[in-house]
Amino acid sequence: MKELQKFMFMKTKENPLKFDRVGSGFYADVYRADYKNLSPIIVKVYKSKGMMEKEKTQIKLLSQYALYTMPDVLWSHSADETYDKDVLVMNFLQGENGGNAFYLTPSKKAKLAEQVIDNLLAFHNVHNPEGFGEIDADKYHKTFNEYYREKADVILKMAEKFNGDGQITDYVLSVVKEAVKEFDKIFCLPITEASLIHGDYNMWNVMIDKKNCNVTAIIDPCGCMWADSEYDLYQLNNANGKHLKLFDTYAKKKTLSENCFEKMAFYELFTEIEHYYNSGYPVIKKLIKKQADNLKRYL
Image 1 (cartoon, rainbow, N blue to C red):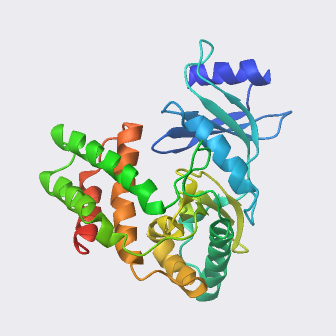
Image 2: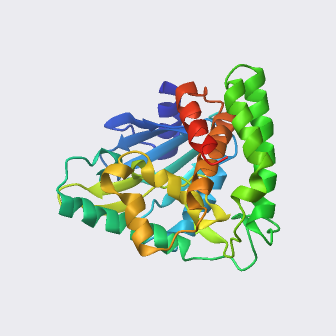
């Protein structure tokens, strides 16, 4: 913390009145700094190399289509001798973390869910005519199955490494292997549009005005890409998403594919393994088994 504060003083030329850690995730620790003569800022310090540049690119693209405010990147820093971690500095956005929105009346829950889902649909209604893949890819894939099968094969290798060092059980690895083997059956229906996805769209990444029950901001994309729009949907059941009936609200507004639930189970397990591997964060065995159990039901 002291090294970070020294670095921030070098950049801002002012000591903060308050400098508090306000969050931590797979890839970064997040701080809020309040100043006397400067506007409050959010300082995101990355644990993994390369994630800062990716998030900058994702925020820039998603901001063009979001119905609500997204962060402005004020400046960034790539790890060097002055500070050995990547840093992203953004403006502070008003609102409370939406993952804490419980005990709302049915009408307020419905109002909030409508706003959250309308914003997600605004992303999903943007399509890349060149095809599927990372948003800054040099070349795109013509079909989602071609793109995602390559990704699934890489994640299988990650799972095998985790199994080798005891982080996931033989059972979880067997589910991953079986799912890859059954890939063509699970992804049997064509995915015709390369949709813009947020990649981590849950209520922890939605800021709200709890009193008036309004969305104030959308934050923290991770894994934003041109993909199957249903890739985003399992996240709607995370945090307090089930309480707000986010998935049900989405399903009322957009017809789901016949194999939606199978795909969601696949996306959840494989994405979480990828996150654990890329971040170096210890695998939560109880959670990964639950995700494996869910996918196993469809195999």
